[in-house]
Image 1: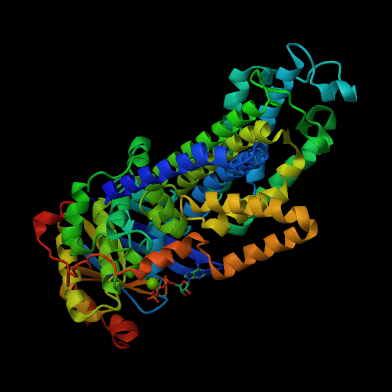
Image 2 (image 1 turned 30 degrees about the vertical axis):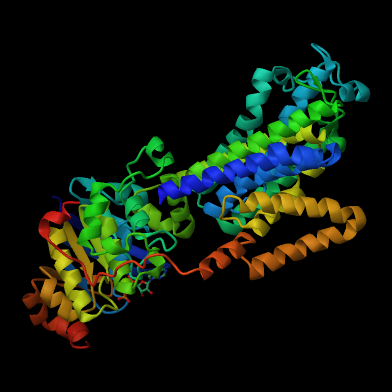
Amino acid sequence: MSGLVVRDLRVVFDGFAAVDGVDLEVAPGDIRFLIGPNGAGKTTLVDAVTGLVKATGSVRFGDDELLGRPVHRIARMGVGRTFQTATVFEELTVLQNLDIAAGAGRGALTLLRRRRSVPVSVEEALETIGLAGLRDKPAGALAHGQKQWLEIGMLLVQDVKLLLLDEPVAGMSHDERDATGALLRVVSADRTVVVIEHDMDFMRSFANTVTVLHAGKVLSEGSVAQVQADPAVQQVYLGVS
Amino acid sequence: MTARYSWRAGVGFAVGAVLLFAVAPVALSDFRLSLLAKYLCLAMVAVGIGLAWGRGGLLTLGQGVFFGLGGYAMAMHMKLADAGPGEMPDFMQLYGQLDALPWWWRPFASPWFALPATVLLPMLVAFLLGSLVFRRRVRGAYFAILSQALAAAMVILLIGQQGTTGGTNGLTDFQGFFGYDLDDPVNQRMVYFIVAGVLLLLLAIARQLMLSRYGELLVAVRDSEERVRFLGYNPANVKLVAYVAAAGMAGLAGALFVPAVGIINPALIGIVPSIEFVIGVAVGGRATLLGPVLGAVAVAWAKTALSEEFPAAWTYLQGLLFVLVVAFLPGGLASLVRMVRRRRPPPDPAPVSPAPVVSPQEVRA
Ligand SMILES: Nc1ncnc2c1ncn2[C@@H]1O[C@H](COP(=O)(O)OP(=O)(O)OP(=O)(O)O)[C@@H](O)[C@H]1O
Ligand SMILES: [Mg+2]
């Protein structure tokens, strides 16, 4: 298992520093929550790590430097993410979504043939995310929470070692949140997980460590209790919520 | 499910083959049959567009380029074969500007070069263009405009080089097709059978591509290119395959168009014909396998029928047709079929599971 090490990360949009010199270390197997008010730069940080936006500084995952590589190469190095608004392939079925996620390493011949059987990893992921009964349903017809689980399932079959989840429980019911949290625990058994979240209850229940971002900078870091006790955090964030 | 699909497809192909090979040759006069051969060539282009645009979301508004490359490659070979070994084609002798055959004409004397070139040349051009364009993430309208510009440039080039390309007249007056006299109706029928056979072959290829894992990936790229990238694929390569395949199909179509219709010229491959290819596909239903074929044949047939009587009105009618389909029936006529089918009750509704069932040993995905 590898950890994530971010050094002096900076993302600038037209002179505005959305991420302004962030240092971050996530230990292998950790469940790190990334919290902070709207516009703090959380999504932009994940965008930078996954190659979506240009950034300066350094992002290392294991022995590999990620900055400067194209998105699909970073993905192949075992870094996967979900999006704030769930993005699945709406016209394809649940099974097809997972099968595509599992297949980045497939050769031309496999691609040009039809899927004759369901790959084992896909079958397992279907069970894990609880969508086995809906495998032939178009992903566009899933409920919001189910789409989020499908996205997590896609990361599982993609066999990523670092999961970056952008607000995975937003809009979910209480039961769905608990199920998602349990899913995160299982997933983190042999993976490193970073979760962006606004939901404080969810964070308290499932976070291992927490980093608070504010205006593009790290404001505080530590265990849930440490962060909650930090007066600076209470002032900018917890005080408001 | 798979078994049912291939069973239905088998029946579909059999019905198509019976219609094309048994019914049409008996029911249609020689003249109508050669018109059908022409329409089927246009339908081949449509099969490729259905793949690249319908499944891949690439608005290929410049297929005339690939159609033209295939057509001219075949026409050059046929001209040289008519002229005989070492001789220049009739039109070059007529213009009298050249003492010898231009170097780039020479390889086309050999069928071993010319025939593969009708397909490989368009594919090569598509590969080079696609590599440049898709890597740079040129998309949507920009890609369409670029394709159109290329079609326009090719027309200008052909017209400008009249001495070696036949200019506006193009290449025509072919006598033979691989030793067979094209004036003989029997041989014209043979050309029709070749065209019909190739169309079925291209449909089979397109079907395989659409049903393969690649086909699913192509739809994924069409609907969310960015997401595909985060799964570790390079969408540029995915698009490139569909684009190159469509170009090869258009090239083959152009190559067969020449013996079937007896001419290839700039007016057949420029901006307007390139748009017409797409209109047929849009009318028929771009995302389906058969929609593009039926749409292309229907539009081409309507064009022949209507432009005989109202030559000026056809252009407007065609434009209107396109607008109506895009505005009210984005899935084309094929979506009407689907709507009717959907009236029937769905089969077994899938069971709904409430939440993820998590057990650690299951997650070693
Ligand atoms: N592409 C962009 N161009 C310009 N500014 C941007 C861009 N993307 C984000 N920003 C700005 O960068 C800042 C950080 O945005 P970001 O989306 O990372 O915040 P966030 O912490 O994820 O917030 P939220 O909790 O609302 O999702 C915001 O002020 C936003 O307006
Ligand atoms: Mg955000």
